[in-house]
Length: 138
Picture 1 (cartoon, rainbow, N blue to C red):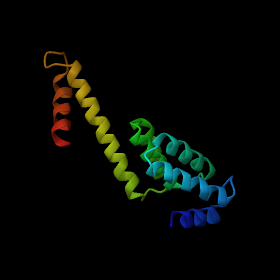
Picture 2 (tube, helix red, strand yellow):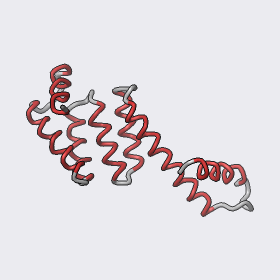
Picture 3 (cartoon, rainbow, N blue to C red):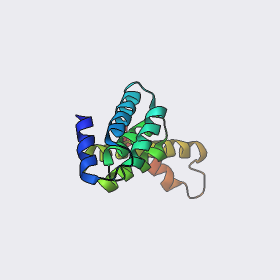
């Protein structure tokens, strides 16, 4: 089904730099790498697909997933945003963007609590917000 969708996108956009059969194979390899847990390879392959298909949101979403699995939150956020620029109704990209941003907020709140105390000048509001974030999210 993904291969069929890929062919339809290529036919409609006409912007691929590789023959469609090569892109289908590249998509298959990327999906296979992701499915096998080889997220670094999947990230690379989805990146190549993204360059070949500048209007496709799906490969940017998948690249974001690979980056998130690798712990590259900033890279994942950028990939999800790139997907959403191309398809603002990509619900899964919105969901995963929010998940990664929430993870980043929790990391920031935890780190802040390690460095600031209630005695630190001007820290009261920041620490209060950090506690709210940590209590509100699992």
